[in-house]
Image (tube, rainbow, N blue to C red):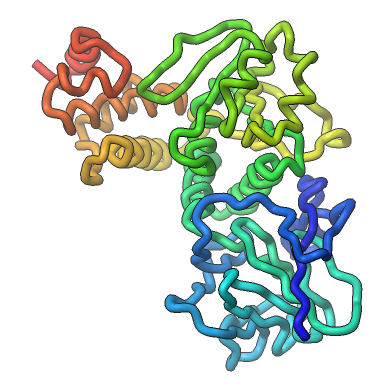
Length: 392
């Protein structure tokens, strides 16, 4: 009789790297569960799309409609062939089984076993099936397969936007995905984002990609910015005020502007089940490596990015705006993109704001209808567009 189990709690220290050519794996969890319950939160759509090889774009697509069984291994006849340079993948290493509850995976008696988020189950009688969940990392020999749904595909795309698209950045992108998931599932107390730029805009974009629609995003700090209804952003001075406002959503704290009551409510922020995630935006790492529970996401300065990257970043923000306004996807014109490069490419926040204003004006046809969608008066939006030569 088949046994079903959850893989346990995950990612207690996502900063450790593997050795040799192996990709970095999370460490073994402090506590595991085998009672059949799922210890993970569900992020996004239940439908799984594929298993992606760590730090690559190579994916093994899950069939639609689902088949009853798929085999993973090194031989050419299996459904998902995995080629590892260390030859630690067995010919028929594991199998995927589709049930009414979704996809499950089980070891087929391989020599090196199957790791679930870095955890290698102890040997025992019978085969145990583990449910595949979005973001889970499956270790097959020296290869990590990342389980992805549409939510994780969008998250990875955005993290590549802010970290870089070149091959040297791919490990960093996957480590960042791991950090986001660890913070979301409360296996890490918080997500730390580090960069000289104002990173509230980055934190908000991550929030949008892992949160249900209309989930609140609350920024708290000594220097309160004006709330922006067009971005569904709330700003408060006191951390205690952020707690009830962020129910079901995200709290973002600038470490350079900690609220006066921050220490008193820090534990609640880090452990509250009613708050989906908790983000620190900072210019320098808060904790030394030896004391970190999760690797910070270190975002390079925009000034350090290649000119070709900058153009792609701007166009992707424009496509975000099109989706947000329910408009058909379209790229900025050369003139519009040049305007953003020359006048607004100083931070991710400025690029997002500029592209939203341009796309809103183009979508709604005039400043009167576009202005409410970008948090400006029609006079303010008109002056902004005219100052950049985009209207007469």
